[in-house]
Length: 617
Image (cartoon, rainbow, N blue to C red; front, top):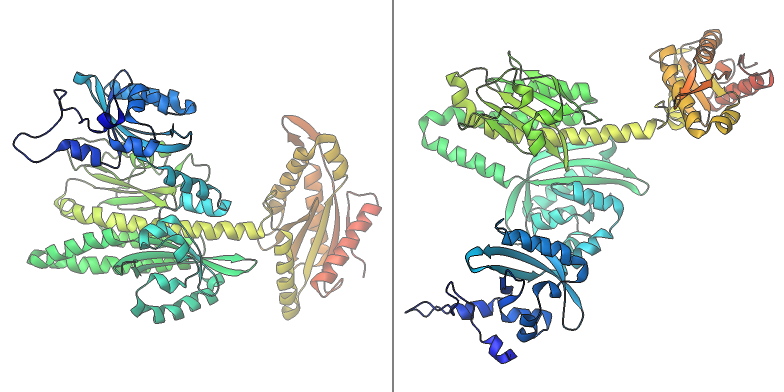
């Protein structure tokens, strides 16, 4: 068969002849040939029965050459086994299968082709459609070379993310931002953030932007639910934006997580229009406004919360006001990700087990809403089986690509009130969960950054930087009150020999033991720190040198009495040498107190170690 003849051959119809509708001008042959995709009728023997002109244009082979070689011969050797298995699945009748492979061109170059195949068993053939996706593959490879922290952000974020510098200029944007706004990423980067909002709102936004950046360190988390974005084509859309500050060596940057709220607003708009047409729905319209206000107020209070307990109290307050029917709970997955613990519960009857395995919730397993009661099939989550509610809703709390926990709502019976409220509960729960998850994620990020900045990673005690800041504050307070202040410097005796004998992991175990022991032997207002290496320090506000020396001796005796083990090996016991200094006798500045305590510690070492020495005047 010559190339000319091949290019004129029509795709076979069901009876193997060229397809042309009788009495019609529709020419399926022309349709087949005009496709830019690679179209093939592939026999179960792996050979082409019919291909279109796109094969020649894409791969550079003539049709005669294509017909002469099996399909897998076009696939590069490394991909053949995998692609052969895919075709076997198609021939076994598994339905439509999609896959991709690299193919060899006539000039020995390669390209990526995305294939879609389906079988026609009665004719022992498959219909195969291919599309050249080489450019997309190359783009993916380029993205993989991006900086590691930006890749992590792109891969974990379910929404658009931009990072803004202190001048309000966008310095980074992910692909979802390009999808959301229609501008290419390289067009977005370098523009002021106002580039993404309607022109009429830009002047007011500059002032708000500068205000947030100026106070960013004191407003680490902020959620704005009622903003407007503008796409490249000029169309506008509602957006929710979560803001958090990112302190760095080159100044404070702001990370903005952008969520397209079009779908949520569309649902609310449809409900509002329906309610306006029915007199009986006027109360629902008022409720919608109240809910939006409550959720907005909840977001503001969550961003101002100073810890998890305070945030949980805020959630409890607003959840009870928003979901007045039935019972509910908010469960958060612990750090080990092996337990889900209820942190907020409302309603008289409760909503299932307070602590359960994440696998006991269908919503957490599947990563999406799980509803019981909408149809005849009732698959109740294991953590709700003890309650066995007529209707229930579990909604995973998702933020920045991570599952934080689950929102659970249950009916307390087959009461008419619940049935009437069910449509509202389903709608409200989605908005509530979205705002809650975003706020909790930002709070978690703030807490993590706070801990990392002041805590020693090995012992969990405060670090040297925190010690210096705290000591400066406590000295000023003692001076103002004309009070006293004690500083203790402690050093593990012969720690280098211990490390050399048992290894650094055992040494770390000793540091961890002391780090765990110290907080149990001091007051809540005292400040225990790891000063560096095997050296520790404690600040004792409102304590005399005598009191501090006594407490230091208790710490020394307690540590020497602790039998140490590591990796099922007895490590013996360790001792402490301690130096004590107090304000104002031994120094009136933080530097003087540290120096005095350090000299006393050196004196304790000189006197034979395992003792407490108070600084001389």
